[in-house]
Image 1 (tube, one colour):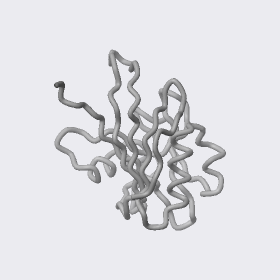
Image 2 (cartoon, rainbow, N blue to C red; image 1 turned 180 degrees about the vertical axis):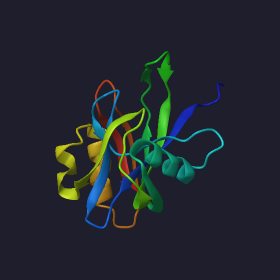
Image 3 (tube, one colour; image 1 turned 60 degrees about the horizontal axis):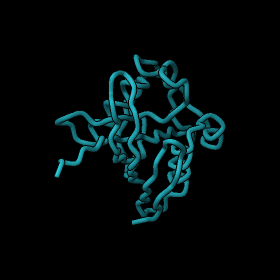
Image 4 (tube, rainbow, N blue to C red; image 1 turned 120 degrees about the horizontal axis):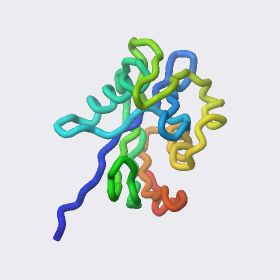
Length: 161
């Protein structure tokens, strides 16, 4: 039996005191997304998220709480020489800004604060829209979803735990 391989990632819904959410524009896709990304080897989830938010947006954060866990169980051809992108396990956290200044990075061309009720006007990815909706509806129970994003977004399992 082959050892399973998963990408582990964390995403931050960074909300300021003006009920604005931090979003970043990806250079590769040109899409607006929430900051976050892969946790590096030897790094824990929360340190990885704090690093990713800072790298992508220039904003320093503290993590408040976990809202959701996701499995993207689809595999697909990658880019930049990656033959197959493995399944992913992703953790979504609510974060508060504690410093830094908005900036871009090698991965992002822009970062900005958007009113909470305007976020879905800018974020177009079905998976991220679904995850943002779970954040908006969070009432203390952790949300879990299994989905695939390719060839098209499809929810395979959805529940609270």
